[in-house]
Length: 114
Length: 117
Image 1 (cartoon, rainbow over the protein chains, first blue to last red):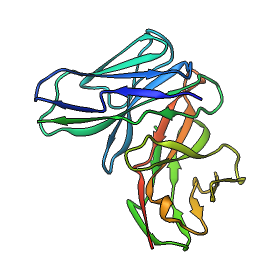
Image 2 (cartoon, helix red, strand yellow):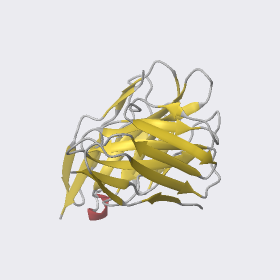
Image 3 (cartoon, rainbow over the protein chains, first blue to last red):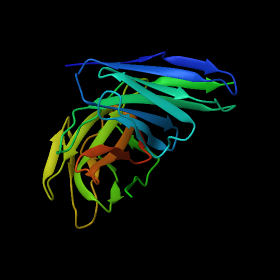
Image 4 (cartoon, rainbow over the protein chains, first blue to last red):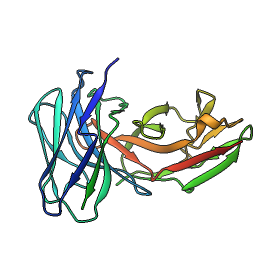
């Protein structure tokens, strides 16, 4: 088995601030993902990365940057936090395969912007 | 693009009674598999069921779902709900796009299940 660790668990920021969320996985998975979870809006893909130094935009990439410096870690940056924004950011990983993939998720970083 | 529709935002059920969560989908790509994920309070989403075979029933932890491509559906059911089933449930699909590799999952909006004694 493996685990996905997201830090911090809670993040409070100010409007306009740049905020960075971190994710580590020890599954040795190729692909990593960042999803945003809003109440009533499901999980929406922000960025994903199929290997070290690769980045692919998801449907919700505007306002975010990502970085995959090594296979086990994937960072997400909120480039300018929006006032009253509240969401949970979920990191996930999977093997890279031509068949169906199961994503394994971390417990999330809960963001609050004052 | 893909879309997954979960018609119920909240389902309330009495313990011991059956529960059904609806999931339908639309896709323009070669869809490979369908999933149900469950997320308990303050925990990570985890896979509950996975299926890629048309008309085959898949079961796990008392839940079951059958993929019906003819009706584009993958409904989740349980014959007897338990208090511990209270959670948020997501239906999701995985498909292949241009490079023949899956590119993450497309999720529905989620259905919250509350089981009452």
